[in-house]
Length: 87
Image (cartoon, rainbow, N blue to C red):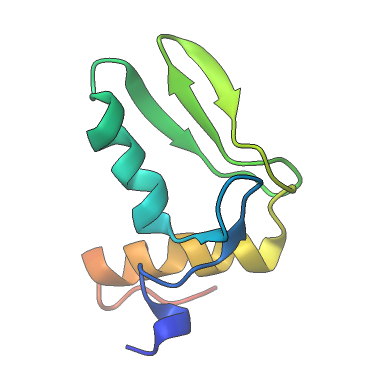
């Protein structure tokens, strides 16, 4: 799998860091505990957001583009289901 199609591909530019991969975003759950952080929302046209203690908290950074969303989400889908293909 090429780096740009990988869960480690640095795709999302943040205010505090250079860029996040989907794995970087998911590691937030481990750092802050699954009891406090329950969801990761990735929606085109808005910054990624975590549900923390029931409230949505957006990452400091730009809105997700369609291309960013695809680069973040598709590697997870392909890893879980190798037969997953774009429609």
